[in-house]
Image 1 (cartoon, rainbow, N blue to C red):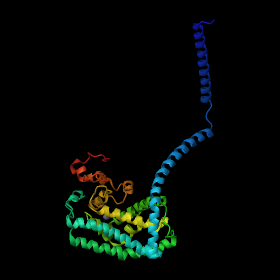
Image 2: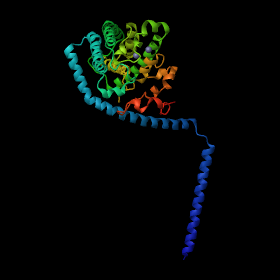
Image 3: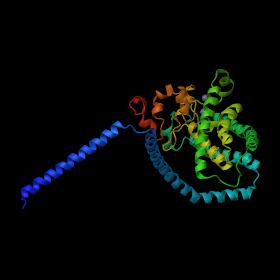
Image 4: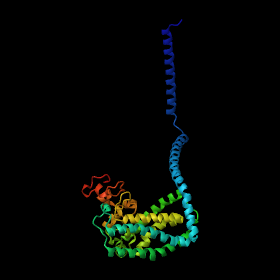
Length: 357
Ligand SMILES: [Zn+2]
Ligand SMILES: [Zn+2]
């Protein structure tokens, strides 16, 4: 009989032999791997596998996100389609009436409803609690009335005498290039994609037309009017020479609509967003939860800085270097609390903030 010690010794030998065999196999395999370069096809295969896995994850994430948004839109999408149907049923389906007069009425309504609220703030100098959000305190507190009336009459002239013929011309261009039927609203995804494009095209159109208006002669003849207000108020957004109104205010937002052949409803949504954006940019108030109006306010104050809407082309062309060295740049963010931005970034602490680069 084998003693327990012998059994243990034999088991140790067997185990040691197996480990030796395994490690020699592994070494062989390793040698094979090292000495045999992977084929181009294999490399491409693994690269493809990595990319496709990443793409699948990205697509899954993106689709989940837009699926949720689409679901939200779908629930309300029927609502919007039925409202749109009602509008068409009520006013008929004359594209000219919708594109020209519908657009004029809608954009004027948005301009004067929101602009009117800002006028009330500036004329009454109330409520007091909003004074602390003024970008240039002490200016237009309250606003000079004769100056305000000059703005109102010029803006109305631009909207009616310049805006309606331009809208008519725009409609002729849309008819020439073709546009989707009025009745069917576009999908949520398509509206989202178009909005991104429209915003970029407007940045391009506004930046270059605006810079051109700052050339010596054009500035003197045309753009000086808009710059009478070094501390602007909301309704000065389209207080300008009629030529400037066409080429800087109307053409840039329309350009993308024309290129894409956007649906009228998308165009209306876009024009309303553009109006709200420019009213905010000229308002003179940096309100909490509103996009920052600091850059365009700075443009009115200093004339030769911040020509664009988004700031992308200003950065690219270096037309924001002075702006970026000031406290106004540190304040150029959306405030997510009720704290006034002037208190968050006081004048004397320039350089202590996070964005000073
Ligand atoms: Zn302006
Ligand atoms: Zn300007």
